[in-house]
Length: 618
Ligand SMILES: Cc1cc2nc3c(=O)[nH]c(=O)nc-3n(C[C@H](O)[C@H](O)[C@H](O)COP(=O)(O)O)c2cc1C
Ligand code: SF4
Image 1 (tube, helix red, strand yellow):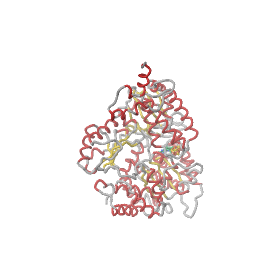
Image 2 (cartoon, protein in one colour):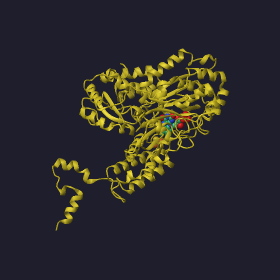
Image 3 (cartoon, helix red, strand yellow):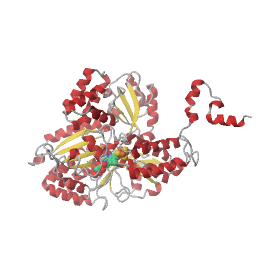
Image 4 (cartoon, helix red, strand yellow):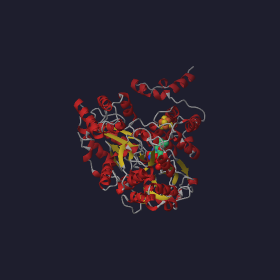
């Protein structure tokens, strides 16, 4: 049975055994590869039947509960049947601004389907998923692991026809799956003239000590969000003792890119993969690691064949494997692990858990990954762009890199620009560029706000557009979502509130409960039942999440609400029914279905009205 061919498969006992055994043959009986084994099994069967979990558990020697726990954690793994065509609309705010909600309703309508439910014949299910990293060419959707871009009403109608005709996804028009790089501004990385392996040869010529010295000189800071100095991370891992019988160090490339509005890593992996792999190999040489692991988000699994072909070519070219670059004693391999729809797995310790085949729950820190990372060994975890920058530093030196950008934020930064702009796409700027400059370049005529660094970042209003993109002013992992004057900033914040409630891993109570409460408060306000009480509660939960959450997800979850409440208060206030308190539960509204069923809709059948009727009766 071919992976991803479940449109034509019925799940039988023999089929389950064949699918599981195929996955085990591909990955071996290694418990750290549990997520990969489950992913590949599901790609054949369409979902993970109980018998498949039992067979996997037995083969790997794991408790069945552990296997089910992992399968239940990731939103792209299903314990119940889903449609043979599984359609997931990207639900980022930029997709919504491009009409994704209306397009999803249209598809459901055409297919006579309720969102979130499978059709009775098991043919199709339609739902939403968090940002798919295609904001520059949305609205976008995933269908059975493939991404579709630039959706329109016509395209959606045609998709409904293709599904009804049971046309295999592989035979749908190729143009539907076209993903463009949309590179709009190039600087030293995107415009550089480098060749595969050049960075490795330069690093080998320097030697590990000098390479580390160049990294220090460069003052490169991580591009994944936190901005930690890369050389310190590399040096710590290099100096940390290895543990156990199989001493190893690891280099992990964080390609989870789940932050809403971010898609620059997608472009680097699509068109600059050699630079990413060169950077990983340079890191391996510098810290003394023999193994690299690239964690690719599940939404980007369509990139996997090309990435694997690239790795195979590099092996043939002597850029991977034994004696890399002809250097005796320097062996380095790279494997790719694919995620399965969990934003929290971008957090580096959750990512390590996921790489080890577990639920992606962030670890308690310290110890930090540099001393106790993958399988307890010293590990550097770096963002895709950070590793590309390291490859450039290997070639051109730390002083050259430090000469770009600002003193505290050296080099350039890739921005993923989307929203109300004429030219969405990837823009590379030296750090220090002003927000106004970026807005002018991308054709944002009437911006009222920019959400920098995704849902967990900063919402800037017009009076702040003179600020600069740099760690010392406006730090960013890369997202730059622009909102025109006609946009409702309350709805922007509500979308982010739902994103965090959906993505909370549930490990700690403040985040698990707080993010859901906040999403409910935002819905209550949206439905016209909000009051000052809800606003006060949001502020309270914001403070609580900041101090009591276990990881960065919870700590940042209320940031967009806090910012928009400070800067776009009227967008909230015009929805508030009273400045006091409104009950969350609308009893009269809840009884609407009962009134419809009984055919009784007189004033006495309404709660509020009944009270008023009684008041006027003698
Ligand atoms: C909830 C959450 C999600 C994250 N997602 C990503 C991600 O998708 N990619 C990434 O590089 N870093 C992400 N990070 C930051 C990582 O934890 C880590 O700081 C980063 O990978 C380190 O790489 P760098 O030093 O090269 O920036 C995330 C952090 C949190 C708290
Ligand atoms: S803060 Fe949220 S995402 Fe992070 S560990 Fe706690 S529940 Fe999970």
